[in-house]
Length: 104
Image 1 (cartoon, rainbow, N blue to C red):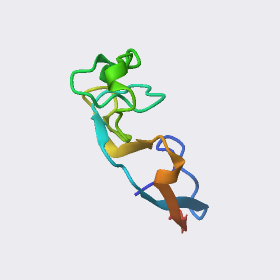
Image 2: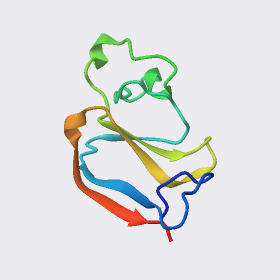
Image 3: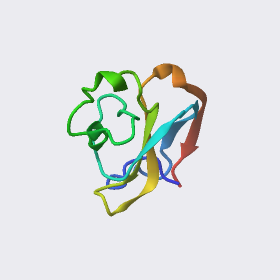
């Protein structure tokens, strides 16, 4: 597994670092297309805000959101090599280890 940029790999022998964290995802929304959610989408079924086009305006839905977002595709049809996880509350993540590795 490589944790640095795919296009500009670091040189052999260089030390690199990665955090291993415990993360609570809760009720996760699986997003198959890139959408710039600034906050978690509404979890009310049929709400148009899930598309990311507009925030949820329905008062009946207030506070009913997903806890996290899981990104699975780069452009709607190209699957990501590694899924991307987005959480909106820092209290849901606990960095447990800082791992140092050396590029071979």
